[in-house]
Length: 107
Image 1 (cartoon, rainbow, N blue to C red):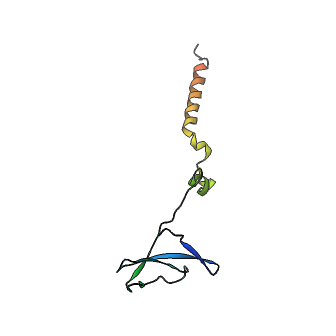
Image 2 (image 1 turned 90 degrees about the vertical axis):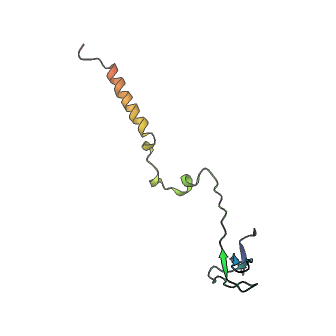
Image 3 (image 1 turned 30 degrees about the horizontal axis):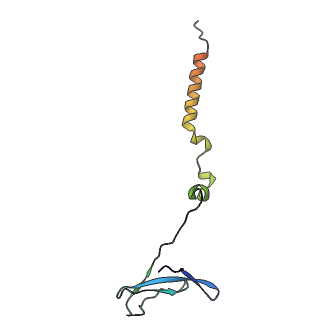
């Protein structure tokens, strides 16, 4: 039932709930306030009905949901952690090249 899932009643937005009968299989919709009790009886056969839960369409737009919308700066890794391994390697290379160019005291 691909219709809009809400309606306006008396200036308020009221959701449309979908029900299915366990006895005859009838599927029907009713506009109800969220505080209203769920229906229990089928309008066709008076059998027991249950509310059918419909999936919600979610569309994520933009460069990223978690990076731009959900994370706080306190949960992001520190900037030096990103290149941590390469900095260690650069320091080791720098030490080795300094030792190679330094004059030896044995000469």
